[in-house]
Image (cartoon, rainbow, N blue to C red; front, side, top):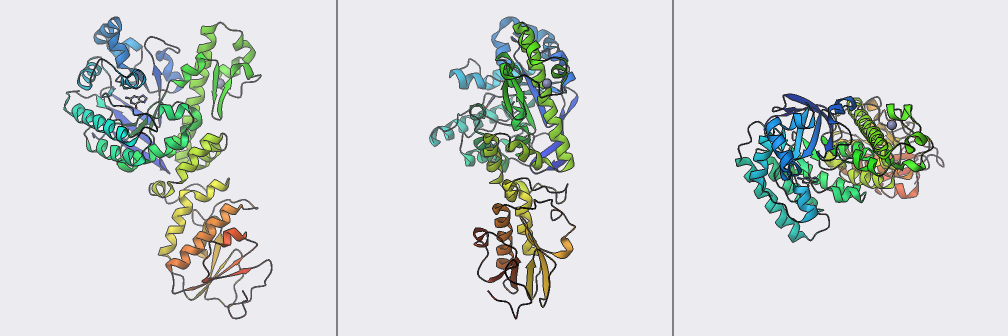
Length: 498
Ligand code: GUN
Ligand code: ZN
């Protein structure tokens, strides 16, 4: 891996970074969205992409190579002039066609040289996009082939073109991890998580999350990661939180062709819209009715432009959220807009320990916005940090300041659990939480109490709680005395009743 990626800010697995693309002589700010350009079907002129905020696009070298006229123009003029785009250009290799049609008539060496010759800034070998749910033997065998091709790609003279090292492994997270580790060990530069398109087409964001999390475990934290084919703005925040730095969107054009209008909450049919819920130039200058009455090509272009605007706006929002330290609040808001992004967020939360490792120690106020917040990496990390604290004697764990006859008094705050009082003003204990906490929040706090008692067996603990639900209290071990403040007046360890 060449040293082309610099991370500027981080939140959960998300990062704002600079990808230096030497052949283009440009630095692309990540997370970056690369509009997909089919050189045969231009929906929005790439010369205008900068208007939307695109610094980089992706096109398919195999489509160009197969078309003699296009191929010779590309060789003579170069890809940038051919497309009329002066930013960075990534090219794909035909792997996607391989996965769609079963065969292609090129190979890694030939297509990489072609990509170099037409002036691509980031090329791609012919990896094998193994679909989801195949049997393990096939996933392993195809992964071996992909790995051989990455090793072959290392030997091709590509000049200063960067090269993608796709990470495959189907729906086997351990294979994704192994593939990530192998790819990171090559001297290739950018690491796309591959074959996610069939999962995304079926809204299987939980499987996407497991695939990305697996790949990330194998890749070094300094590796720039691309999510091939991820173009719907409703999942950008989640994909960034999982650690993806680059996306490509064919959705802006494909959806426009079918009169579909992208939003951060999902997809609308133009025919269903009385109002445009968007402030982009297209939506402020036209009504849905006007757009419906337009000729096909004009309608398609306007919808594609809106789709690009909404996608780049979401990406800017994601970048600002990383800078502000509230990316997971945004992910959670997006998760609750659609049941399948909620699946994806829950799968992310299953990896809270993995993602807690890269999270800043202190950031913007933690907002508890739903039961899912109880499983955020920050909650887990607080719980793990309890082992480094030193409670002594008989310790009262309390939601309020009552303290009588105990050696120490600690506060308990759902969902985090117990903490010494002098941490009250320290992140994440400054969290904003609802007046009526849910069961999951209490359960998480109870797990914190259990953790504290488990780590510090020399101290004694009394938990004074107010009306915690019984199933939350089930997590509190018997060696922690519990007092329900709604029933008992707490006077001290001696008089305490169970
Ligand atoms: N486009 C969408 N998915 C893939 C993939 O897995 N590999 C390549 N090369 N291109 C893709
Ligand atoms: Zn719009």
